Image (cartoon, rainbow, N blue to C red; front, side):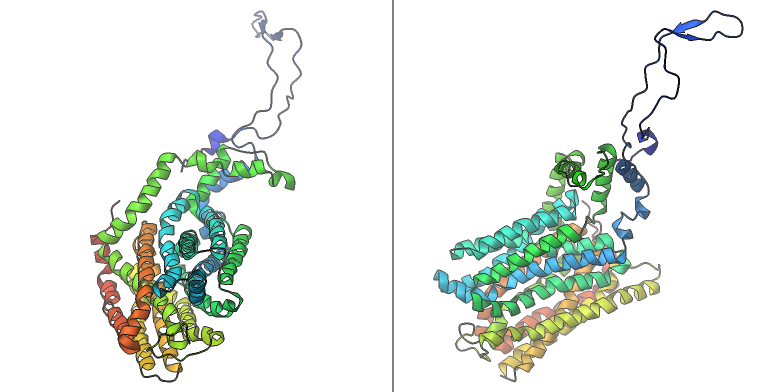
Length: 550
């Protein structure tokens, strides 16, 4: 960021008046020195005129003062009030909720859409959810560099606007190929909420304060898939297209919330804006008409062209596509946790499409596979166990995660916090989730009371959420200042896994049965259980050994 020399930029700021006697029309005759030398005739002085300088407006002066003291300024997001910080966190969490709700809300309507379009292959129907999730993984490669160059606000509002348009197209689609393509692009442009949310929280909260806000933010993206499925079965009575109309309405309301209640949180972009206000001042707006003038609004966006060069934009976009794979495959720590992060995320969607198999009646149930055969109006309640597990995990993380981090920081030799301190919650979740998978599978296999699989669901969701949430925070902190690249790599990995696993979920349980199908998923999860403990002891040394060099 270019420095602003306030002394050089300052100058007269008000209209100047010449208080001297006006010059006569004749020559200016100055008095002679005391020696009696003759008077010297000089040309007349020009009249004084008003001039405009870089700090000739109140807004320019305020911007210069803010830049000079930005670390302590109230314009610095880290110095905002708690109310401002939590307001931003809440809106971003709702954004993540709406986007991920859109990923699963189509699941209840899969068979209805297939029937309307004459599609008989259920694996094609599952792609309605899978293609959307795949799009969620591609979006960060586009919007992460946009947010770095032009700010979080530009990324959020631009993506949400286009997301609304693709939701409209989805609700009006007239064929299965059109529906799948539109769902993919809706996922791409809806990805900003789940992908940039943690970065936005990190913009406004210091590392020691992030545990609770990240945990509460994560409830939005994590609750979205579950509540989307629950709402979907009731809304399906109005027709499968209303599943997508609802997302459209929610996204439009969320867009309004962003415009009204949020502001830029990325400090480098805020500093660029202030620099532009200093070097390109506008007259101060004294009326509402002047403040709302399109000219003033367009001028406020002028910093994008003035302070972001084409070369810089090309460089940032190139890094956005090259850094994530280099970091992911060149750093074993990043690869290990990204793969488990992806598996955990994929398990969510496996159960979103499998729960109707266990609890629903035809067309959701499969011939030869045990089902409790609940009617459609009650099928939403089959997700209750997952919802309770997610809620309990969010509450646990919000109350415990920061306390654990601070306690371990006090006990550390150098008194400094480390990203590995987040892995206590990861370890807990990794142990609980496989237990839930075994309970779910074998209680369903034994055809017990429906509460048995629900207990398994709750434990799966509880362990899954603890692990997912803490890994997300760990990735952000462990790979700073390349957190965006590490997060993008992890999100891309999780989206590919979550796109593929649900396609084969029904066949998995149909071929192996509920017991062995659940056990297979649990055994795969058990493989990674030692990882957090090993990383807790050796993670710092591994990170330094494989430190990413751009």
